[in-house]
Amino acid sequence: MFADRTDAGRQLARALISYKGQPVVVFALPRGGVVLGVEVARALESPLDLIVVRKIGHPQSAEYAIGAITEDSDVVLNPDEAGLLDRNWIMANAEAELREAHRRRAVFLRDGARISAEGKIAIIVDDGLATGLTMEAAIRQLRKHHPLKVIVAVPVAAAETVSRLRPKVDDMVSLYIPPMLGAVGAFYEDFSQVSDEDVIALLKSVAHP
Image (cartoon, rainbow, N blue to C red; front, side, top):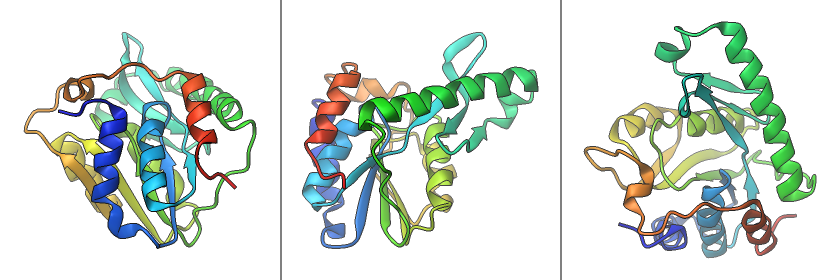
């Protein structure tokens, strides 16, 4: 059990401390992942950027992800779920989420330039992994930018998601892999929503060239 995202981020930073002094860029998934990303970036004395990935929700339950899309239009779908839905509906919703991803980057970073992952150790941070579709999309986006390594770092993750994602990255750090995950928030005493204003303030507190 983590007290809150800040506590989880500090514990995660300790697990990643061997990367300090190396050419690291931390990439956080907003909003929740930014709280942890700040702690990791501070500990490793590395810059912090965002990968804005948007979930594509099921038409009957928006919170249930059938896929995800990144700012670079990379789409990852759950084939079992997506195969049962109208392709045009999926693509229309993906386009809507893509626009929201671009809007969020502009709000969070005021159209600031992205930090290049080329030749760097890219550490992707989030507050937990359930289905892992958003993280899989983030990995796919970063790979296109030719990083030296891609590392996924989270406090808690579903075992089957870790098994699926591990072959796609150079290292996978999860502080806890429970036999049954349920909801990520169940592993935090405080899992309060992170606001846009919180994200903006956090990003201003760390290096972003």
